[in-house]
Length: 422
Image (cartoon, rainbow, N blue to C red; front, side, top):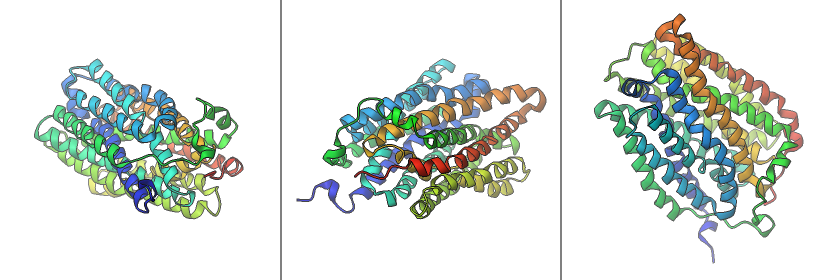
């Protein structure tokens, strides 16, 4: 008798539900960016303080707990950990709407990070269980579309709700919506039974010694982390940069900023992520080097186009220029996440993913938004209200570092690749 997990269309259902959960993951993150101006005005926060709330508060426990929760998922079930995590981070997102100052909002964002720590790595591993290697990068790319869909939705929903009601209502609305999705996910999605040879979860941290011998893993992880430092910093601050640069500073202009940024993220981000998965599946099966080469080329183009887009005086021209890097700066997700999982044995996929996310998020989330906020405060004496834009330009140069590291990973990636055991 065919079980639910063996039905032909079931992997597509699993991927759809994971995409929905991942969308809420990034919706809850990005809503903070579009609300920067009203939150800073209401709670009297500097750019450095808001950068700490937008990145460091979230990243502290999000990064550290990613590995143990990924290993827990290998033992007690990936779907249980994902659903429980969704409830936790959505609850804390709703609580952000009750914040009365820096420390209360900081602690609530810390809680959001605790919840989201258990969502991504188990999802990566669940996708690897349901999709064969020749279709895995594309599946991971579809899952990763939750990033631009969540970012774009967060910008649009946050702008409309804040403009029509207030910023507190925006947090409460999206938080409650996420909690309602969790039981539906748990009802529909099941872990796939693993073959006996790979069914037993590995001892805690046993994946670390294996990864320590794989230079490609660390080059790609740190490269992706550099990209995320720029990407998360830009995601938090570009809405405010655009508002200041084009004089969209009134409360009713918040919707205009939301439409500008939301359309960029939705169109550019979804196109880039899907394209990265398709290219990796087609080229990577011929030569594993393409799993590193594709992101490297994309990052080389991302840096200069971001710089041009942030400095053009014409909003419509800026939108078309910024569409290019908004597509290319997420192209790496399918190729690199697939490569990271194939630098460890199949039974250690969740642990390998969790370790990758630890490095990526400590650098990206922990430093990116805070670094741009600190730089902005330091540059205010010279550039005034335009200081954030110049801080962003410094951050964008990290894409060039990421490209160099990805090129260096090509040869060791081919040597360290582990073929699927299941």
